[in-house]
Image 1 (spheres, helix red, strand yellow):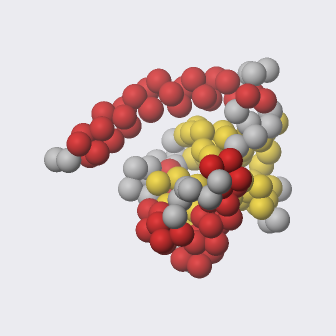
Image 2: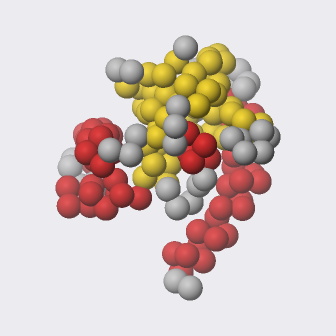
Length: 149
């Protein structure tokens, strides 16, 4: 097992048990403006289990609503949205009903990654990420489109 794989195996339980509950608590408190400009709290029922889940997820506003992004291999929540599925999001301090669906179009994922990658370039003067890394990065991400009701 590589060092990266060992770190990922250690980091996931810490994220699930410590970081995510802290972020959830912040997003549902008066402190939400500290995080809510790029983190949304996603609330949904598992398709098979019916169990309720809440997870903080990075998002970007889009013309059709929101775009949620998560690593494909490290998370599974996004698999509930392979077909359109109802959920709620806590967006900037307010719960909103929504419908989410995975966007598997490689061109759409690549375009979103390229758009987001341009944002930090203003701060890093174009050093991150290199354009040839965008395709591999797009392959590693799940992109979920959320339409707000």
